[in-house]
Length: 269
Image (cartoon, rainbow, N blue to C red; front, side):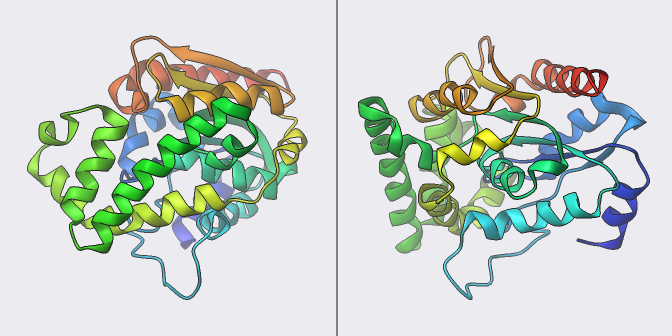
């Protein structure tokens, strides 16, 4: 964590940490920072694989704990409790960080967190959802392993955003996602191999808002509906008309809901 972030999180009574989805970056949450205003220190760290962060070192098998370490550092540097926000992969990272520092979390807001390890204990529905995720993970990984980064990125985008989504992207965005593509297999593997038991989430006795799009894919729909049963103070909100990429396609609605949840959490204490 750089000195600028450390100074920022210590200069405000409350800090909001917002974690982006795979293939995205800090700019995903720019409008959320604007919606929250100057009452909070707002930090949107970027994951490994982003241009600002660089690739994973490769010194050992990558895990969700490795990704969460940067977020935990920000939590530890904050002067008070923090509000954690996460979308998709960022939601999985946020959950891992929260379990590591439950006493430092003021609230959680997770939009379709990709905590795929939970699917393994969800019966037949979970098995079917897990099979779907394993299939897209394999397709993406196969593309990367044979050097077809562009094809891997296209498969990834079309799965999460719908057929034709890749072709609709600007060439500059396609190029950025193609550069990022080698990180995708690491994200999938870290999420699938995460060993935090479902019972661990009962320690997160903080106001938690779980969001999903009306048209959520089966795997993240299942996870979003399961988490409120595990988190002691959680509720589920469905964003009408949205899919998995709701924080981008329905940014105003999603950000307003997040800001309201944070405000209500602070008012209650």
